[in-house]
Length: 150
Ligand code: TYD
Image (cartoon, rainbow, N blue to C red; front, side, top):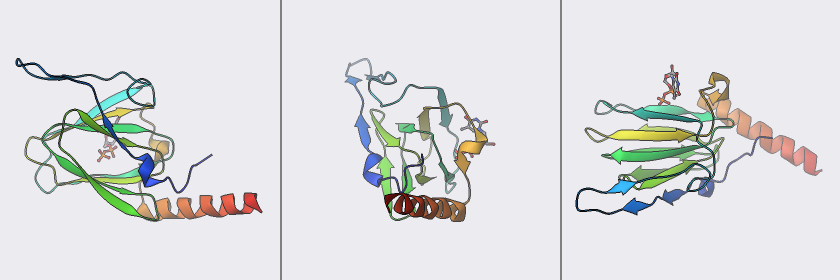
C-alpha cells in the first residue's frame, strides 16, 4: 500500500555516532540499528557543478538516508501537499527520506559529496520522474483511502 501523502515530519534528521579524535573524527552507522532499514545499496554524488540540481523525482517504496559527508547542499522535500527545504552540512547528520516524497538536491557547495544509503537495489520502476504524475499518484491514493473509509 502506498502511504500518501507521506508526512514530511517522517523525513527526519538522524544524528549519527561521532567518535571525536585529535587525529580526525569518525562516524559510523549500521543498517536497522542507527537507521530504520537494512542497507541494500550505496551511491554518492560528487563533482557537482555550481548551479546544478540533482534528484527531481519521488520513489514509491525506497527509503534513503542522505548525508553531506563533505561540503553542503539543500534538499527540497515535497509530499504533494506541502514542501520544505533542509540544508545538510555535517558528516554526522543524515536525513531520512521516506517513500512518496518528491526531492530535489540544490545549491551544492564546491567539493560537496552527497552519500546516499538506500533500502533497495536500483529499480527504475520505483521512480516517479514527473512531478505531475507524482501529484496525481498522491491524489489517487488520497481518494482510494477516502473510499475505503466510507
Ligand atoms: P538518478 O537517480 O536519476 O540521479 P539523481 O536523482 O541523483 O539526479 O540516476 C541517474 C542515472 O544513474 C540514471 O540513469 C540511473 C543511474 N543509476 C544507477 O544505475 N544506479 C543507481 O543506484 C542510481 C542511484 C542511479
